[in-house]
Amino acid sequence: DTEVTQTPKHLVMGMTNKKSLKCEQHMGHRAMYWYKQKAKKPPELMFVYSYEKLSINESVPSRFSPECPNSSLLNLHLHALQPEDSALYLCASRASGGAREQFFGPGTRLTVL
Amino acid sequence: GDSVTQMEGPVTLSEEAFLTINCTYTATGYPSLFWYVQYPGEGLQLLLKATKADDKGSNKGFEATYRKETTSFHLEKGSVQVSDSAVYFCALIRTNTGNQFYFGTGTSLTVIP
Image (cartoon, rainbow over all chains, first blue to last red; front, side, top):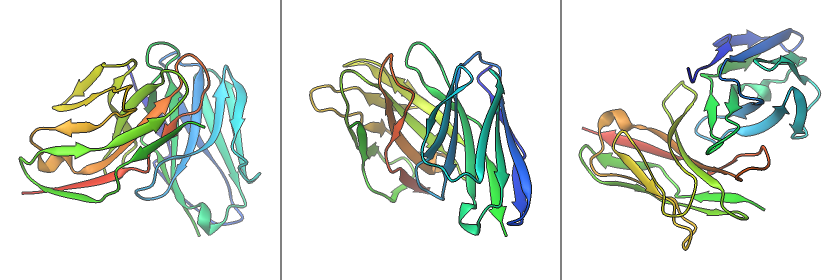
């Protein structure tokens, strides 16, 4: 099973709302990632968790708050977002050995009104 | 620092034409190299990978060879189909260390019947 699942698939929220994005993998990977992607651009790294600890935070605004409750789950909590935060949010997990490839989820399409 | 330089797009080809998308990289040591494909509205899918010099990754008729001497990993396909229309990303990660992936800018391919 090489599947990474993400929920919800689509999310529309106002600038005062609080919402969460969820990501799950059952491949036993110990590194998990959040990316933001604009249309036809490469993914922009936001956060990396390694062994459930925050490893990389790419100077993301505090209105984005990541959480890794266990080795299979990754959340991204959203609060007071801006319209420019509208994008595709991708979760990925990374294999530990071999080529260390990433496996991506289908993404959450976020629209901030 | 590590980086990936990818051929600019967009690329438009007729069905059954030959495809080449150029990718060169800068990295310390022997990184793992990848091609990812992204279809409209979806996440990134791993297309192929290579971990050492002269390795050839292949999948679904696509091929790429890890060339250490030219620091390249060009993507090729002998006969493209309409269903190959997508955005293609070249990427790397350092072998055995670090969590960060480096992506190229992406190349949008459109195949017309």
